[in-house]
Image 1 (cartoon, rainbow, N blue to C red):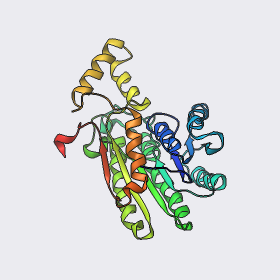
Image 2: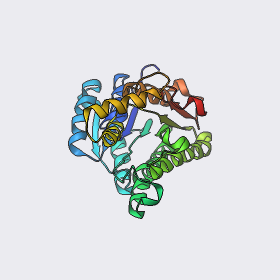
Image 3: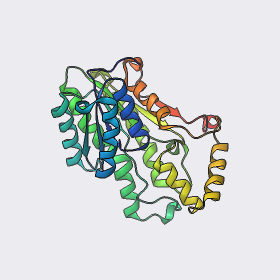
Image 4: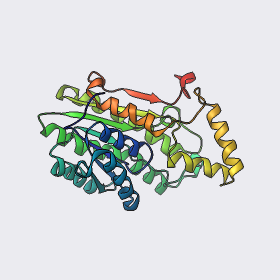
Amino acid sequence: MGDLSGRVALVNGGSSGIGLATAIAFARRGAAVVIAARGDERGRRALAEVRAAAGEDRAAYVRADVSRADDVERLVRTVVERFGTLDYAVNNAASDEAGLFKLTGDFSEEEFDRSYALNLKSVWLCMKYEIVQLLRQERRGAIVNTSSVNGLGGVPGGGPYAAAKAAVIALTKSAAQEYASQGIRVNAFVPGAFETPLLRSAINYHAKGDPAAVAAAEQIYTSRISLGRIGRPEEAAAAIVWLCSDAASYVTGHSMIVDGGMTAWAR
């Protein structure tokens, strides 16, 4: 993918899991990196890891709730004020806090709305302000939105989450077609099972915290994956950075599924 020195990457949802691994991957290739997250303590811990790869002056953290327009506008403005431009934006923030593991008819209206705010509206808001900035620049850039294989065919017990992730793909493809002629590429990253807090939370919920049940749940889960293992966040990061890089200069409107073959039978 080459050297990314002189480029600036924004990674929201960058304090753990795939987001943190992506921020570190950008930093190791020479890019300046801004990570955004809602949790201040975790965000600052993540910043220390990114700075270890990027250097003290080439990484920053901004506390932001990307489901709020004011926070997103401030976030993008801060990136440009700090580093002068924006080249790559990775919209990775997601949450299960609005409730999972319920039948579709059992979700409350408030849970549905919160799930859409955290997992879909946040992506739209980020793209809205990122695109405005990219259009101001002579050098445009690339956006990657994180979806999920749950958005490809639904998932029992997580209807609103799956619906939001499906909508992320449609939103990505729409923007890709709208802005391609103006030099902005927009792609979706569609992950399967990766070792992240979100996946760990789901497994622990089903296993009710029992170590033996956790091990059994992991075995059942990995049996559905052709490669026979859960992915490493660094493997997801490599795909995301490639989508942003010049190596993918002819790639836009693409949904890159990276799931170890878990959904290969259905697509």
